[in-house]
Image (cartoon, rainbow, N blue to C red; front, side):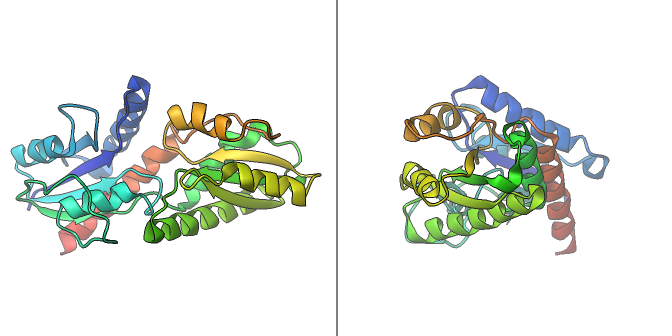
Length: 260
């Protein structure tokens, strides 16, 4: 058996987005616990030459017989997580068929889980918004994620957002935590409802995105135009917390493969 690790993230036309992901993966891969294990960073789309099939081929070219796939996505409600699983031959979560086809892979494939409500990520988010908060006991949070209109994925997004919001609320001591999705378009209505119900509470908007870009810089501010809130647009990267999360996923995945 020769284990290898394939990390899959979405990809972006923004070079800084790709750079931050690569740096986080490289930091995780430098762990002594992962020495001598091939680790490849690949992308769902856009980054030609570094797509998922390219990553599979690269690992198998190094003799990898057992491949642990880490989906570097925010939520298990992401349709992309299911789409990738389908292409590796894992059972579908819904009747929504992805467009990746079927990957060419000879290695035994083991599929990990995305971030969801990891405790250390709640601490990361708390650090991101610390400069926006002055009296957390009088402040509310609004977590905003990408979301999905598809029932099974929508429900998974709801579950993850609810749990992560509560972790973040309890970590700092905020008055309350709510959540909204961009798909369907819930953010403005949820923020307006929060302000109507508790007009004395300042609302801090927390974007749940891996790296800053189009959604954090343009979509969220546009959707919330005309409303009063605190926001700095900070995403999860850059942060060593993501590298630590990746390192744990990689190490635990390889350990489980070796026990099979």
